[in-house]
Amino acid sequence: MSRINISHVNNMHNQWLRTLNFYKTEMVILRGILTEIAGKNSDAAMLKEVEQFENQFKVQTDNIDVIAHSIHVNIDTMSKEVQNSSAGYIDGQLVADHTILGNKTEEEEKTMLNIIRSFRKFAEQWM
Image (cartoon, one colour):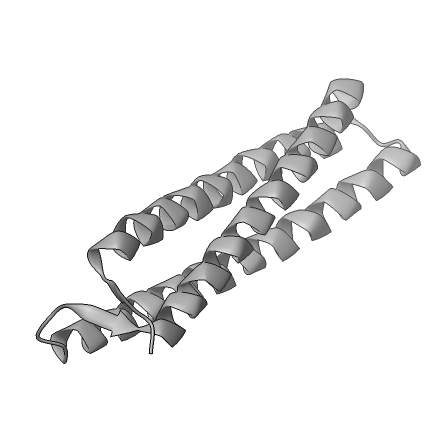
């Protein structure tokens, strides 16, 4: 069975959580800008785009929450396993779960960057 020292994964967990927190905070800022744009304009096409961005922001915020929760669960599970291992090693399946969470975090970051890029174009047009 494959095993790895927990100290190698702890920094990654922390980095992923910081990244997710950054994008969650970014969603709050973008929502504020979106509200400002919607308040200043009444164009029907623009309002449809506002609704689409609102929906995207909600979905991505929910995705961020799910991924962050999964990371916390992975951290807790690894911590318990380390406590049960005198050598400080964890099971290979937890490492596989860890890798999957890293991939999910990367994909979420790519999605967020695309949404932010689209939103900036939209905001430039309507501000």
